[in-house]
Figure (cartoon, helix red, strand yellow):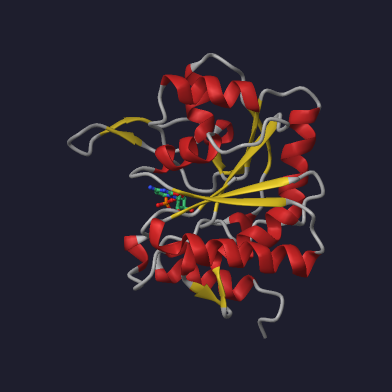
Length: 224
Ligand code: C5P
């Protein structure tokens, strides 16, 4: 599932973030190319803003044609928060699906190897898997007044990305309790299920600001 229903107000564009072009292709098109290049992906559910569902469908069909992918594509309208959009996508999954990847369209340059690693770890028995990278900054926990209350040991921290992969029953159980979290693994943690971190990739950066869009453009193979 690719969630693409956010407005992306911090990017300051006139269209929702997933439809902002990067080298002439909307971010969602790049994200779908990564996801559909993964041989394990047999079905793509795209969650989009109501006004952009037709565009999302035709983008997905273009990518399937380009890759020769036989994956089925469904587009559904998203919700107010990211978690609501994931819940809307979950409701559309076909009966035969037992592993679900949840991917942010905003992480549009995530290499296919990250998808492959996440799927492999779920297939190997982990109920929930997230890609993550080591944290280079020292991270402080602060109180409401901005005073530091703790400095976690940096070597124990990971910055996590998407796609996050789940056994379907585990993700559905988590969303049945609540969809309110900044990532889906956070919901699964609340169930008491173990979440495994596998290697992420710097190219899976999340595009939030215009500077991120410039950084992503520099990562494209054709960039001089
Ligand atoms: O806003 P943010 O960058 O954190 O969103 C992460 C991903 O979740 C984006 O791909 C965005 O399109 C998606 N999203 C969504 N529905 C929302 C909010 C965000 O699908 N209501």
